[in-house]
Length: 200
Image 1 (tube, one colour):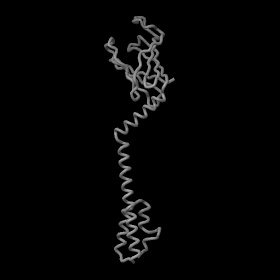
Image 2: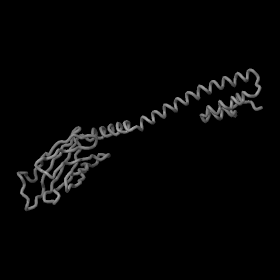
Image 3: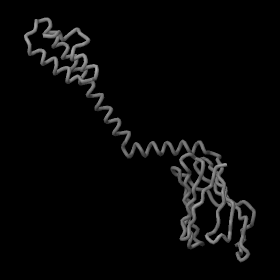
Image 4: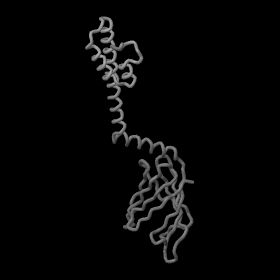
């Protein structure tokens, strides 16, 4: 009968090296079936007690790891990480300027746009640079920068408010890209356009 204890080549040792404590315990209990000298029988039982403690600890650690994974992958945890990531992005963009152009659906009015991140607000300025001959502006100067509004940034998104006098106009949804290099403006109108403004 092979000597089980005190040998690195023993089967239970190989089992425990791989973390298979239940298998090692089963091997030792099988070994106990044989008639053993009293000292060796006691040593085997002591070894079983040690392995049972290790097995219980390993099971608890596995259970805790599974619970941690479940918590970290929960919708709430994912949403919290996204919120924190968005907040860090916006904080790092304070003072960033984005520029581009936009126009009316028939291109009768074309303007330059400038968007600036100020803390958690997005400041939007425009200036008209081109007007079709048949268009009469309602007192709005040409080639003059005017602030059109400030919007609260929520996550990576900012929305402006409706303009009651413009029945077809609903508003704009502006989304800062995940890398912070651009802002996409989706105009919420019947003939709405999408524009992209790039960081300068």
